[in-house]
Image 1 (cartoon, one colour):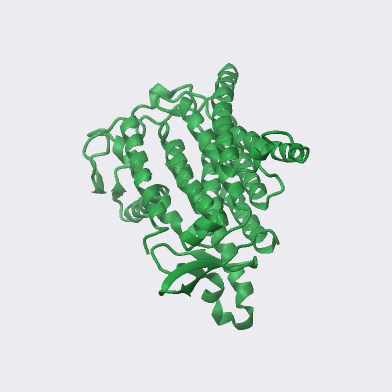
Image 2 (cartoon, rainbow, N blue to C red):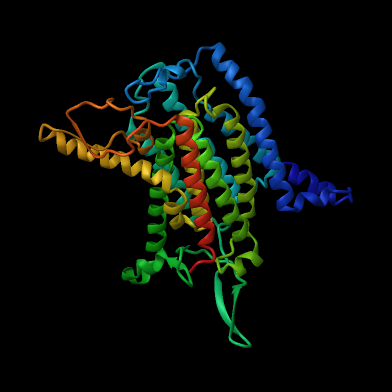
Length: 421
């Protein structure tokens, strides 16, 4: 809203009003405001939750050896993150931008879905919302995002092409016309665009429509996968908030170079007009998460719950899809991927063992971060574990920081893919 206000004032020559046209200026203001709101509102929200005795049920001591210390800690802290993001973006964002609208819808929708899950856990059933309902809610969002990017005339790109210059020097230019495109970026490959329509070329004259159909399916899978991966990563103080803030920085850089035609030409990637508003949103996202860490770092004063974790994963997924970088997610969100894979492997192997009357596990615990806090002798003597590493039990804060370090390395590698081909 302030963007439109100062643009109006600029028409009357108000000094300094032109500053609001700079993405760097609005981005930094958004980050600061989001962080301040998160810290300020967070304290009031925690106090309110404590007064109304709204807290997470005590954790299972057989899984979390420090669960007793966390009794009575409020949950639903994702509300702090969502409020900080939405208020900051409403103030500093361009609300007519299709990408800003999509990100706000993603935040509110998944926040509402996670809130329902947390509420049911506290008031009715400790298992929360049935998994099929959560998956359906995530899939609906994925379909909505994919169809919007397909059908909206504002969701366009300018394709990058390589031309020859005097002296055989290759330069990258962008086509002048804006087009709808089913292309996405392939990491580590020169001329690194993959066209979903070309994959569906066997459909003949319908290959373009089939390509968009494949894109919508891919969008839905990415939203569901990353949202659930972030949800599984949420199990230790500061874990998901810290990892997601780091991923947010990488996404912010990718969004910025995609929105700037000179940088897009330099890095030989497609130019996406209007995606500069994603930089504003991502700065709000990072600020909200860093502010939330003020209270969520060990020992946590509040947990984010599914209200936060489902929302965070969805934001990361939709941002990557909008800037056509969804194929970078396995690298950038490798921690989330490993959390999901560890659970799937653990469940399948345990089921296979149960049919044979055996207690079999791939890891000591799953998701994978839980394997690092199993005390010696805590597992049943008759349980056979394929991967019995690590041997000891680490403090939660050490596990969290080490996962952050891994995510920093992965985020750096994601940025490097812009040049390494």
